[in-house]
Length: 111
Image 1: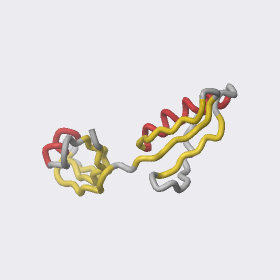
Image 2: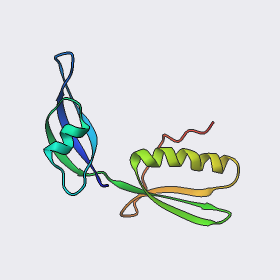
Image 3: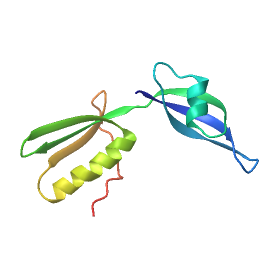
């Protein structure tokens, strides 16, 4: 299922409001119902478009691996790849956007 990013306003249980960016899963195209289902207290939103995907590439003793992932998945899978690298089982690790430009993710943690 594709994911869109939505800039939203939502009503909080404490009579306040919050603004933020949410990941909303859609089946075909983004609808208000998708936002109501995904964002508690949803009032209004602006579709920022599809969530960008990145390519995580690394080499292992079995060959080169390429994975197309969202930024949140890059963080979790990247952490696992860094653990492989710490054990000498992955190298030449890089992350690019879909056009091939280098992208930086300084969030990989090992240990």
